[in-house]
Length: 287
Image (cartoon, rainbow, N blue to C red; front, side, top):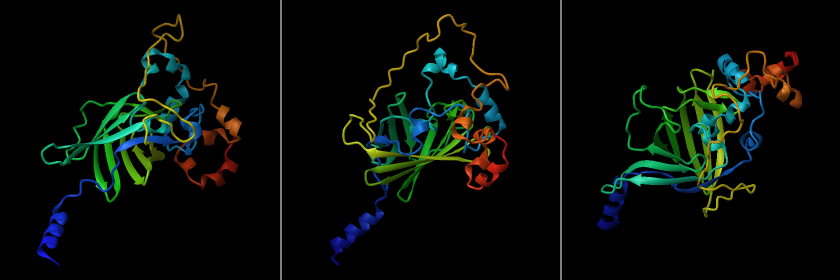
């Protein structure tokens, strides 16, 4: 082997690997997983298969869907832990140091609610706990082989499921972005010390979009903008009125359970409803 070839090989070995997989581009969601929850939306009082605690359940049963008609809730942003579940376009690009070409961050633009997200890749620490919380939180990423793993903190209060089931502002979100050719799998792991007894794991998929038309599988079409405008949906309502239910007064508590022929206790969720062993217990659970 010539000295020139050896020199080039040595130079290659000394060159740092900034990323094992290129995630840049425009991605459109695929809705073959959890489609009823993600497109028409989850049913009321459906908490089945979620590791929630009593506090989360009580909050959700007090939640009246009419709350979404209040001006301050009409355009409320989904947090980063939930946002990827909906109809959106996702644009990913790199930010590099102009002098060294070191990777500083991966940038994302999410069309749903027009959110900009930064995933820092330069090893910086997360801010202290008292730092401001935002819809997208503070994210740092690292490559684990060909998988991009992202850790996000400082996220505002939001939803674990958008039928009133809350997520606290103390959640930690760990994501794994996994690309196979033109297919991107996004796995999220959420821990919530206030409302979950175990980590909540979800996944969703995207396909590479070669145009900006935003046409995904199933004919789902979305644009890059999210024109949301506050309006008075319920005329004459007092500005101090907040739609809600007192304990035991939620009229929808058994609607999901009756429609799908499952016990109400199962529909109320909890970690045990996540596992196959719970099926053997259903016979002893009262409707």
